[in-house]
Image 1 (cartoon, rainbow, N blue to C red):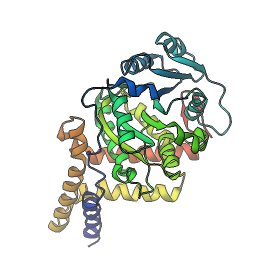
Image 2 (image 1 turned 30 degrees about the vertical axis):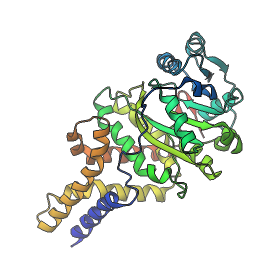
Image 3 (image 1 turned 90 degrees about the horizontal axis):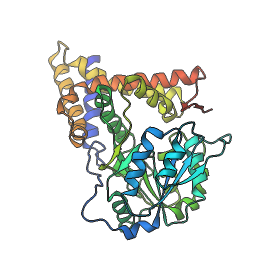
Length: 367
């Protein structure tokens, strides 16, 4: 009886996810380059890149930006790099700002962006991570989207670089889980309080940025992209987030340890450093990913059928993400394992917090 109740709850959970009106598992919020590009529209945009020890990837990022339009405005904030980041930026024709020491209460990326904000005089600012490359025409497409739909913020999620087994196993699911946490349709609706952005590529209206008080409005945020979208949306502006094939990540994680470090840096932050939320998340993940797998091996027929129903809905929810990134549908078989790994990483993030091992990024430790 108890087994039936638990597996029935798991089946209801997965089929509810499939049937809710905002369909968080769908991949139909997409913005890709289409048709000819108009360089004239790009005079209204300044690209702003925060860069800390980004020499291996910055050159490709800047070359892709230069391909958007001749003479494009590009500002690189050299965030106290110890490598050739600044030299590479200057050689590519970007304006380079030497970042000042990090003030107390600020996260590094947000502080770098705030310093660069003083150099932006155009209608829009394009926030770009140094490890992404925009296909030709992306920026024109973003500006057209913003103007056509009166959007103050438009963001597209870069395609991860699937360079090894662990990237191929875990990174499509990272995007999948992100969309479950921040359903794109809800994020894009002005009637919803949900707001999301992907920090790799964000087009932001400068007037909206100034209205919220600049990047100081999110000064301590570790999950800075969604915090920025939330601040812009709370100020009464419209935001939009979607997937794309036209922006490519340049940095592969390459190992489980590297992906784990990335997830553990902010996973417990996502749960507001709450043990109650952590326990709730754990129970939910066990119900969603563990119970259905165990159920299909249960001797009771009704438990086995309910487990199969849960696994069917689970697979149906993940297949669109695999299809979008041209991954084999066979990866769906490993989704329960992937869920367990992400749960373990979330616990790792919490344990690091309670051991007073604060978030660490490129030599910086945050309180």
